[in-house]
Picture 1 (spheres, rainbow, N blue to C red):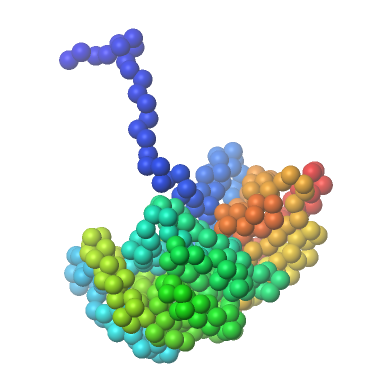
Picture 2 (picture 1 turned 60 degrees about the horizontal axis):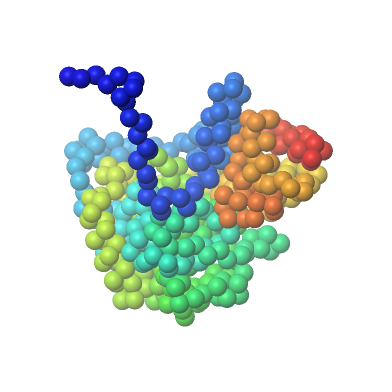
Length: 411
């Protein structure tokens, strides 16, 4: 065997990656790289960047854990049918029926979280160069997947002066022959907004008239402070709507990746459903034992949700009052979930990322800059996750207030 000497060792070029990766950006997790560097310097980081209730002490309901344990003990550790086990699909269909939408279990597909369902759906309806209407601010997973597919997310406005309600006229003005779908996230991540019924009906009508697939992201419908939000498809079962949800948020089990998608719209979406099922075959199945928790969740005790909503509403009030009291900052009160989208007045030449990274380095508080959700970097929006206990939130907002004064004064 000949051992290469330094003189004979060739310097190899890095193996290239696909060009489609260039546009894939997921700021919620990408910013953690900077947080790790701050931690390496010796400063503790408080993570307000990701909406994981478990990280803040909330516990998965015991009967869901028991359902998964029982499934494992009973030997349900192999592959499941690609679309999911029949009892869980029936439970999802029954849940929609109880909320006003009659749906066959055959039109339900269990997925690895709602995200996999969204990925599967965009993959079967979008060709390269197609467009999908996405709200701004928006959960960045949509634009990241579209970038991977060579398609394009086109942002439509939501209005903070109106509680982050969608601008329906602006949505319609953006429709072109390449538009394939309309994304509606209600209740909304990242703003915590709950859409008014007239806006919801208008978006549904718009998708129906223009033959767009309406992707209804419904992961927070059980976490609206005023009560559960009705599924969008229930207003018109013939409209081309695909609904997505999971056990992640309202059932406090984000790491289980137990989600589902439900395809209404009748024959108009039969080809889409068939294509999704074909793609689902290729990925074999979603996480098997966790599928048994779907039935337990949707047919069992939900008393934890009432207490969870009350705690979230209390935290939303603390967040809104404290952030609005900071000079140069404003915050629209959320109506659901555990997110708020405050806005800070930026000095000339500074961006939302400058503010968020400065906050992290000075205080150890990690938020996400608004441009990661599609807002203009100069507008000064950032997202806060307010799952921490109220006493801790007050301490965090004290630090944010002090940093904001220093940030603006230094500039």
